[in-house]
Structure formats: C-alpha cells, structure tokens
Amino acid sequence: MIVFPTEGANRMGSAVVSSLRSFDREQQKLYPIPIVIKDSGKPARSSTNTLTVTIGDVNDNRMQPGFKDILVYGYMNQAPDSEIGRVFVNDPDDWDLPDKKFYWEGAEHPRFRLDEDTGMITMRHGTKEGRYHLRFKVDDHKQSQTD
Image (cartoon, rainbow, N blue to C red; front, side):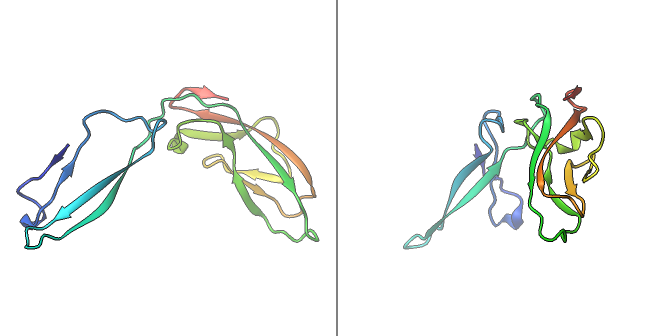
C-alpha cells in the first residue's frame, strides 16, 4: 500500500510504502518495486526507478553441523597467516551470525586458527600442502542448539 502524506519532505512530495502481508526471507529475499514519477506539465514527463526492498531475517530455522574442507597448495612455503573463509553452516537463516559461537570439534588443529565470534578460519604460515577436513561445533543461543 502506498500513502502520500501531505507533510514531510518540505511539502515537496513523499510516499510511504507499507506491506499488506508478512514476508519470509527464506522464500524471497528481495522485492523490486518500480516507482513511476510523473509531472503535470504539458507534455507530461515521467521517469521510472526501482525501489528494492530487502526482507530482514528472523532466526527461526535450525542449523546443521559446521565443517570446512580445505585443499592447500603451497608455494615455497611463503604464504603468511591467511584468512581462508568462514565455517560452513547449513542454515536457511542468513542474518543470524551474532547469535552463533564457533568451536573446534575436539582439539584445535595446529595449522588453523578459528575466530569463535565470526567463524572465520585462518590458515597459519607454514601449513603443508594437503587436504584438510576441519570439523566444528556451532552454538546458536537463540535456537538453544549446538551442532
């Protein structure tokens, strides 16, 4: 629904867009809304612009355990400590990172460092070539879930 209030924007015209139903981010994240602006001149001129509405997320889905498979190629053992990505967590909710804490499943791997708040994995300098299968526990305190 679009409402055109008489006050606001120094009386130069404004609109308020509101929904007539609720949305679910897991079904659709973005909604493009074409906005046509037209003057009252002779001849009338118009222009169209697209307003993109991004639907926020609610932490309403359970997650699956976290893991990361890493294939390391070394070049003369010269790579410094390097961020290589975040722990993969299968969770349809994609705005709930602040609700999660990340931990090693078992002992910490000596060649990798884990940021418990962000899930970012750092490969340490001197990591040998090879395939690494890293396993993690992820705690989602909003869902009272640890996997």
